[in-house]
Amino acid sequence: MKVQQHEMLMALQASRRTVLKGAAALSALAATGGLTALSPQAAAQSELRTQLLKIPGVGKGSPTDADWQKVGEMCLGATKASVKEGEFKGVELTFMGLNNQNLHNLLFRGFLKPWEAYTGAKISWIDLAQADYNARLQQSIATSTVDFDIIEMGAPFEGDVCGKGLTSEMPDWVKKQIEFDDIVNYLKPPVGTWNGKQYRVTIDGDAHNFNYRTDYFADKDLAKAWKDEGHQGEWEVPKTWQKVQEVTKFLKGKKFKGQDAYGYLDPAKGWGGFGFYFLGSRASAYAKHPDDKAWLFDIDTMKPRVNNPAWVRAIQDVIDALPSEPADQINADPGTTGFQQFLAGTGSMLAWWGDIGSNAKTSDSSVIGDVCGFSILPGSDDVYNSKTGKWDKLPSGPNYAPNCAYLGWGVYVMARVDSDPVKQKAAWSAAAHLGGKDLSLWTAAYPSGFQPYRNSHFNIPEWVAADYDEAFITSYLKSESDSYNHPNAAIEPRIPGIFQYYSVAEDELAKIYAGGSSAQAGADAIAAAWEKITDKIGRDSQIKLYKASLGLVA
Image (cartoon, rainbow, N blue to C red):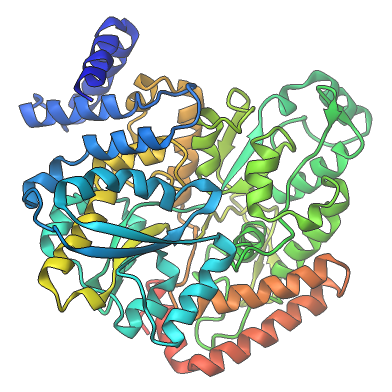
């Protein structure tokens, strides 16, 4: 380890470009008043972060388990400051999380192996596919058989889990260790809390952004065909969903670089409730009015909006676009569209979480690293006004409403460890290690299943020094930041049963996309099922929690 770190340092010293980029970053920070002189501690952290981003290096192929373990080892400093070597010897912990895309739990294993070796604790693993996650978690809750000490979980489940008293409250020392204040504002409390108590170590930020192929929209032959066929406006990256539809249909039957050309990629197959987010990203610009914080349910009644004209339009868009998308798209789930299609060179437009940006440059599966651009989700020429029942055209132009889908993954410790102080500290120490500031920079930059979620992740010179192309990373980070901070962002409601709503919606959407019902009839069926879920959980309680999730007084 020491030899490799030394070699990295020598390589950095030999790179005049890297040194100049680092100096530029420090100068920029100093100009804002954020830095007067680097303290020895700050200098050491800066050097550590530089070294971390060289493992294995941008453009050097996908990271391996050896890389994950190396990152975990290099980030052990905070653990060593609060835990004695061997302090948790004999402690056994069980961790439940995803194995999606061979990421998540597989990385956690690597990150935590050095932690296990230092602390003496041992971890066993429960690995779940994304499509199986909700069912497995709900089964544990319903049968009161929580068989794990730590869980990787998203904020939407907090109503189901934290609201039932199943989680351990975060100790103050953990908040200090993970540098909690560095988290972007929209992921701070009330996210991660329940009844004012902090439960979550955030390890991810979530918003769907728009990924597109720059080479498609710079192609002169496609530009000529676009004009010759009488389309209005320039051949360019669509800024509205109306244009996304037009481009997708235009590309049907055409060739690009010797292969079949495709426009937008819709995931039409369910994904354990997570697929509903992708319809949500088509719907948010239609359904989220700037004058209304709600877009899924009416605030005062919990009446579903999923069958209003905005959502029906989004469903119809998918129906109309599928014939222009790749063959058998009806069987493509979000994992297929993101990793087997878009990153592998099929299609020109995709809404996905930030994984696409980090994978584009650092995954063996990607062939689009040099031709991938990013923006917030497309807007709409008009937006549905649920209060008036009419479509509005805004004086400011198209309506944009980024879908802040899922509010990111977090690590939660279960209350069942609280009766054993040593086991409780061990569980929280493992969670804090995974949520550490420096380790998080690595997960944001490389394939991990996670995207930027800390203010410190948005230091562009730090990424450029790691050999990320400046235009690429600027576009990517801007799409993330602009989504998080957008004044009309569509925010996820943290209410009990949210994935019951999403899962039943996926079941109905599958019928719609297969031609089993119309967009309106299918949407009505979803709304009717949602009403039953609300009544079963308790309408008054759901209204109160829904208002709270939107920042409104109940």
